[in-house]
Image 1 (cartoon, one colour):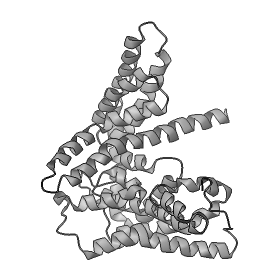
Image 2 (image 1 turned 30 degrees about the vertical axis):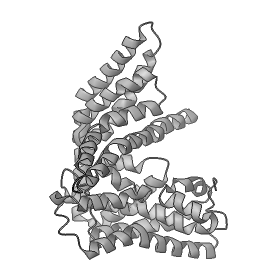
Image 3 (image 1 turned 180 degrees about the vertical axis):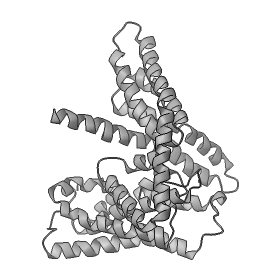
Image 4 (image 1 turned 90 degrees about the horizontal axis):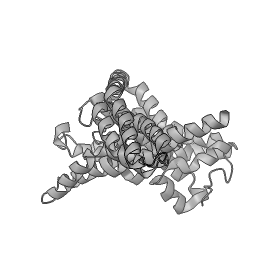
Length: 354
């Protein structure tokens, strides 16, 4: 029973959620970047492409989820429309609605897939019926629930930016390193002021970026002795998830990056007022492809957010300190201390692939 629950948890909470994030990368995230390029005079074509890419986020997420669940081709294709419906009816909770509904539609679709001689009709019919009905009946409630959670985070962040800066930074940073998708979590909770203009959520997005950068840059720097330049690149602009096997063997190696998250998060919210006005998915990316900082900068380029006129030298200094310099210095300093007292030993941070 325990093994079955573990397998189901991996299937739905790790594989499906990770695939959802990939769908977001391939639509909303890349579309946002294209939109930013389109702001350059003479490159309006990029804006047209970017807007179109962002508009198919729902189908992209659902197809990615169905594919990750190893659904049959007809189920995967039908999930494109399921994702469109779920994302549309889900509103602010669209990504979460797509995740839940695409999983159910895929699993039910697979129950009938290739079971009849008219599979080409039965499988799409059942998949779309289940996914469509859940989108119409359930997604609006997910929209309301996600809105409540987002509003709670916004109010709490506005009232207690110090405490919430620590909480959001540490929790999202830990999620980034665990084998789950921090990007998908940030997208589902709408941790950005993008579209809504919510300053509280924008601050939460900034704290999330801080936490993710602390994990990636921290592990990249503190393990340089063992992994050299290959490890610096693979963790610093790839993912700190590579350290999970080592964390399981010695959880103490996680102390420096978690402490770094707890320090940079409130600095981002209270000192530098670092806000995320790019797509919410950027909040959970950290320095992966530099998409966390890029999301912050893209928000600066949007006049609707009061930028770029209000962007000053301190904003750029804050971005550099929070996303790169402080995570490196704090993590490395604590690692040297932990090595000295024997909590971290030679080889504890060596990547298995290196």
